[in-house]
Image 1 (tube, rainbow, N blue to C red):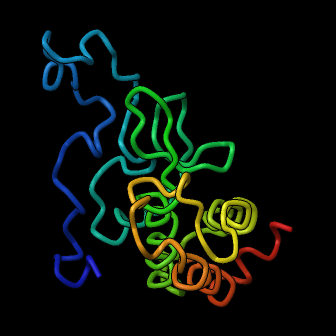
Image 2: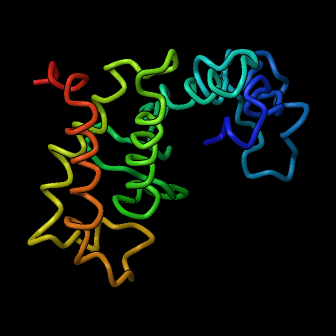
Length: 189
């Protein structure tokens, strides 16, 4: 969809630190009044691995998608955690965002992968391992009689639709993964 409204020969963004591994963050974004002052940006940091220079919208989006399920490198970082949880807000402690933010992070790349399937920009089979693991191992353990446990929901804990989670959200994503990408996930066992 991004390629339709944006010239597909242009990059996804012109923000330099998305591409450049030698961008000087410290001169641009560190101030003495910042609560992050004194923290260093790691050498060879880039927001998205594999996104080293603008290649055009489809290559850039593919690089974003291939790295969509990257695991955090340390505590108090949001993302797909090794224990099967998805975290978003982690200022003073790790949270659980299995519905709000987290489920969209899990589901939206699958929808995009469906669009790219059968093109030169199709995603590799390894991409599908994380959503398969979360849909098979994690979510069934935090859903009871179709209801997502509100303690794991994240920012949607007040939402009236948590009782429909299994039917409305989970099954649609699981069906997308199984129906569209069965060959890609068949070797995960």
